[in-house]
Length: 406
Image (cartoon, rainbow, N blue to C red; front, side, top):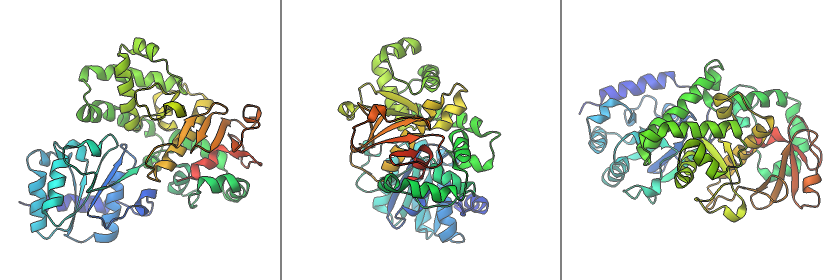
């Protein structure tokens, strides 16, 4: 088998790649493991992450090879046989991108793992359910999830500010000092407004002119290509699903009435629940349930949001600042706890008093700078995350500061 073409493609990609700006996950991955999976939404930087590692460690080596399974070449050849030829050539590490585009990819990777002395890094859509694959990869692989840019990362990517992440307890305990130090360097409110519309994806550094169009393309590809390929969604349902997403976008924070949604989209109630689950796993929406319903997939969430505010701005101009504030808070909190590999996701629930219960400990009310404590008075561990303030006071914390958690 001629591997030359694959090495030529890799060389061209490495020439164009820069490793000056790295996503947070780059330094969290144990690259020495034999089998690593990197999952995430389209556009968050999975491919760049792999190429950056290759360039920094193996740029001129023929022992490492990056391939993408959306290349038509892999329609004509077995992935297992390709890996076998690469190992016989002297290969040691194989980076496999877009695995969800390849039939029976999990079986091939399992057999490569078992048969060859190769270290493998694979990436794919966040929709992939590794534990549900025919081949048992869950006990062989270490799976990492790459989320959208945090506000902290956005500032770094745009050469505005470089600062280490801040853990939630430290943020709560020391927010006045932390915000004061940051405000001596930048004007956070100006940058925060820009982040809400243009800051969640690494391609923000390429300019804003086509930024929202690219997000629409990402959403369309997820709905039209990824979801039908991985989940049993009929092509005839795609138009209904798009209408469903648009209804969510223009109404967030959406307190869903499942019957009304079913009538508006002509999708059955059971299918609505399935689609909500699909869209959340695909990183298009975020749901927040009450603690009592937190472990029930087929239950009505209390609130629905677009997964990040950039998606909202791309899909509609009808955005309320209140929904943007809550969507940002939910996004950053969920992503922060996702990076901690918790056994159960108890990162955020709706609260009986206040807006959200975080980590079964903290109560947060989200609002503007004039937001008062009336709704959460006498509630222990309760705080206001307030927009339009640079520096907080006591239990009122600047909303933008929660973008420094990961």
